[in-house]
Image (cartoon, rainbow, N blue to C red; front, side, top):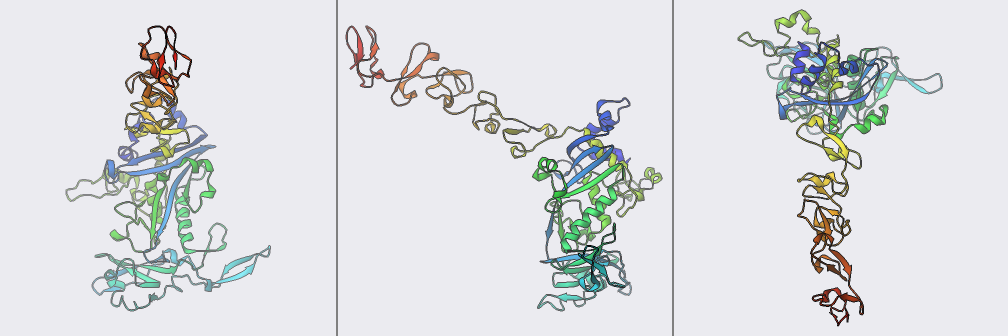
Length: 523
């Protein structure tokens, strides 16, 4: 069901199904089973909000080495500091008793419980004499030190009086009057209040790196980005089978091959905006910034949400939807679908956030797109020098192709970009003033002198019809056969300008007079 529903909503779904659903082996199936595959950029859309303009895109780089798939998802991270120079970390939530309007103790599942300020650190000398950091005995996280109380901006003290805990729904989601410390927000009719810890983005924080147990110093925004990468990569990677890598432009691109960076276009990067606020729609996150939710992440977004939203960057559909009042299921692959129950839907990441188990059906969906035909470009700037983007209605066939030489065909509309010369006239590339007399032409402008003997757009030769077609100091040696007419240098005094009986040859002479008998010459 997961596979079928994702295929149906994927713009590449039919193409992949023709390959993978075939009972007999084919070249593409054999390709997918190869032990090594070169890097390929996979681009497509899936119908998250609907079709056409409301589709959402997925972009990633796929390769395989020694039987292990590697997927690189490119991101452009942005911090939208709605409260300037501040970063918010999640603390947790407090359950609300609506009858007594009281709250429970805050939970301790947020990032603010894993970070420490300098007051909880001691420094030591390492084996090589370098300074290393260590936590004090019984260290207190910033949730308790920096964020036990709130500090207001000057002049704003008391702005949230009577608007805390159960009444925090009266606040603005940015908590814009609070400079540092504890922030809160409660959504209307929500049975809990969310709590965060606001710190200055310039403050040094410390945390315990889990792999080696080292205490590391880091700036708040750097920790947010690094944790986004850690949370997604550690969850979606299957050792020995599949490795996920998040490319954050401006943060960790030095870790990736230049060939990968050069192949990615500017619009390939999924923009993610981390905002200093409680997000709308009951703290809903989305996998990339969009017109519906400009700030798709908060700096308080949880690891579980990151994992789920990166799943959408795989090009995966949500599997929740619920049962309607009439008993029908809103979506075929909804967790509530009875046919799905035998598969323990609560363990599927796209069914429920915060899931620990990784189902490899998701990786299969993403990796099988390696066989799809992919467009190389959307515009000329996506191509190398000397190439243009051969875009058409079928975007899956857009390719970078070599620009065309003179006299090759070009589009009637906007065809100049297809030509090496940058000039197109009625369907043919040309270089202005480049064709000598008698040479092949398709328009007058191509002729060095004279004009094209044919109507623009059809094949002809560069000829002249009258003196005005030639450069100063030349005349048109016109005759009955227009294809051989040439521009010639005007004749000097004494040069022959005609034969016995010649008339009308004065224009051939520099002096403007051709006369004499029996020999006609310029006077």
